[in-house]
Length: 186
Image (cartoon, rainbow, N blue to C red; front, side, top):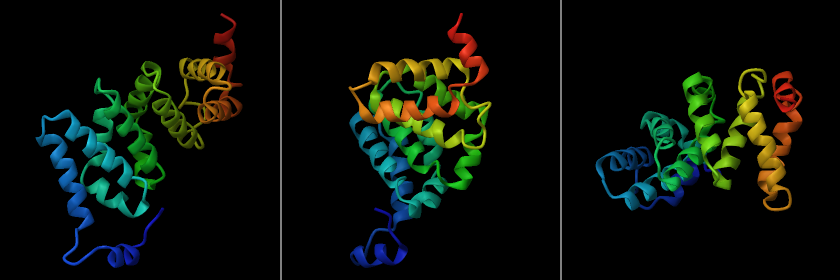
């Protein structure tokens, strides 16, 4: 549910919690704790905050986007899920959209997508691909990604309707590319 500043003021008890400070505190806590459960809880909270556009400026200012990208490289699957979910939630922001068009960022998402078998991670990666590819159809999804999408789509039929639907959409939009069809015949 999206909030407004007026709604938040009404729902926040006096003396209240400053949302911007709280988000910064969560980011700081992630970096200062060595407790993996605390890090998982912090990143889950940050990913949830990313769901509401009202929080996007606070998340950007607190460098939560950088944190989301960093944890994509972690070995902990929960942290990876929180990172990709946070990125998926915030990728509609115009400034973040520009940030995503960085080849290094896209490569991080590709690496996670190719390495993971977690269906929630795969759904989030595909959602980001679908969003980012709207303006950049030729460069965002190389043949190896499209082949993985096709394999996931075939494997998920009847098992995970969300994963099957998002991979079907990607294949419908991007599956006719020359590189993809040529690599299928090799």
